[in-house]
Image 1 (cartoon, rainbow, N blue to C red):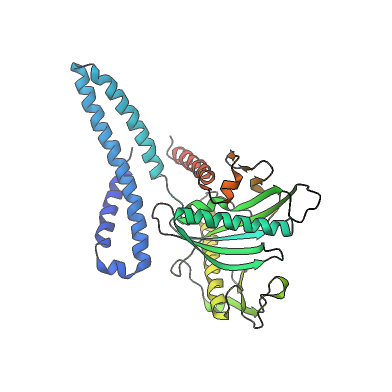
Image 2: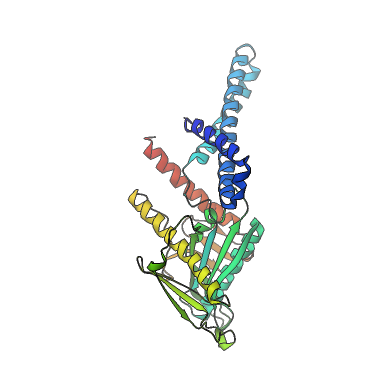
Length: 358
């Protein structure tokens, strides 16, 4: 049933040898990638060995039960434990998204609702920042366009994770889509509840080796940065807009003080978008429906609702519902994401069993 593990044992041994070589650690990116794969394989192998050991223990208990019936119950318990172990191992062997070992670029955009939507975008950014802090990840502000009341019309952050098991993109990719909020806006004088929305886009952060960008494919324009109330408006043309002409993808960055820094950050976002586009194309060619992330911020196309009067959060894809919205917005996002991970795993297991004729 788990014949594939034999090949993974060989790969695990090869990576172990490479990690013991000093030259491997001279390349930080390579060492990080190998460490993550080594940890992933380690979990599979540990699960496989547990499953094997439980099988041997059950067989021994069955033999002893022939002469002593007291061992029959123990054998049944071991059989149950082995089934549970087999299920865990099956989940570990389900093919992962190739980008799951990457860091993430997370972009939040305000949508319908004007200033209230921009304030909600700021709430979402804080939620992700606090969740990252709890998880041991680091966040870096890449670009931001603020609204007059201190919200965000658009904000992009990089999320980096040191943990080999919980990488940013593997979890945060489920946040892509439209998030709807129901509450009384600060601008509402009559106390009426309004509904507005903000959109979230999550991309795997691409390294230079992942995507090749040719200079002659780029059109680079510079312009003057803008900000609310004229206070943070630059007096020089430091903002940068890059158009990737073969694909038509346009990115801009104005958060840094220098044109060069803004260009580097814009290229960073462009690489991530090109990598995501290439992966979507590859998935389509393979006949797999990649999890879609809604690009247009429309209240009707929501993945989650944040209801302030009821302190309720509802995920419309998984059916998850809880009445601890205040805690979720303070970074307690784990259970919500767990419902998405479980639903995704169930789909992948079903596809795997269907593909194997099971």
